[in-house]
Length: 374
Image (cartoon, rainbow, N blue to C red):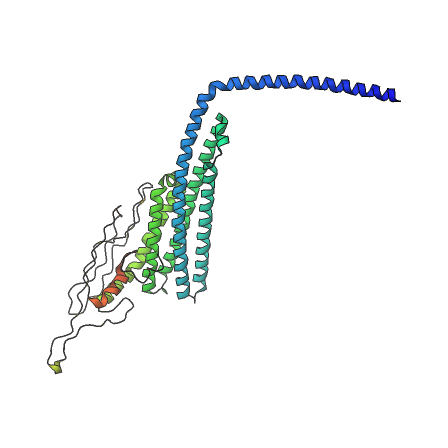
C-alpha cells in the first residue's frame, strides 16, 4: 500500500513539474510581448507629452471657470436670501389671499431647485477638473477622446442649465407681473414689486453677459431671454400708472400714500396777512430712467419698449402751479456705465415721498425696500 502511494505521489510531482514548466514558458512569452509593447510605445512619448500639456492647460481653464461659477453661486445664494426676505414681507402683507400664498411657496421651491441645479453643475465641473496625476501620466489617445467627449457633455449641460435658469427667472417675473396687474394691488405695493423686477432683470443681464456663449447655443435659451425681456417691459408698463399717480399726489402736496403734507402758510387775513398758502414747486419732468433695461450684448436681445403711444397725462395741478406731470419716455437700452439722472427739486416735506414713487431700483433714497434687498 505504501509503495502504491509513493507511486501516486511521484506521478503527481511529475505532473506538477510539467505544469510549472509550461507556466514558465507562458511567463517568458508574456514578458516578451510586454517588452515589445513598451518598445512600440517609445516613439509616442513626445505625442503623449503634448497631450499631457494640452490637458494641463485645459485643466487650468476649467479651474478658472470653476472659480467663476463659485462666485456666481455665492451671488445667487445672496439673491436667494434677499428673495426669501422679500417673500416673507409679501406674505405678511397679503395673508387674506390663498392664491398669493401658494404662488410664494412655488417661488421658493423654484429657487431651491435652481440652487440645487447650480450645485450639480459645479459638481460636474469639479469631477472634470480634479483628475489624478497618475491618470494624467498614463493618458492615451483614447483617454484624450474621452476627455473631449466629457467636455462636450459639460458644455451641453451648461447650456441646458442656462436655459433652465432663464425659464425660472421668466416664471418669477410672470408672478410679479400678475400681481402688479391685479386690481387689488395698491400703488405703493406695485412700486415695491417694480423694484424687485428691476433687481431680477439686472441679475439676468449680468448672467447673459457672463454666459452668453452658452445661451447662443440653445434657441430655447434665446427665446427664454426674450420672454424675460417682454415680462420686464410688461412690469414697467403695469407700474407706469402708479408712478403717474404718485407724481400727481406730490404735485397736490400729498405723499405717495395719499396723506396730506404740511405746507408753509402765511398769516391769516385777520392777523394782517392776505397772501395764500405757498404751494410746493412741481418736480421737473423726468428725462430718463437711470436703471433702464440692459441690452444683452452676446445674445442680441434688447428689453421690449413700451408699445402704448397714448400715455395718460396727470390731471392739472392746483391753480398756483402751471406745469403738468408728464410720463417719462420709454427707457433706452442701458449702457455699461449707467448714468444717474439728477433728482428734481422738491420741497423738504415731499422729498421722501417723491423718492419712493419715482426712484429706480437700487437708489440711495429708497429706504422702504433697502433692508430687504441688501
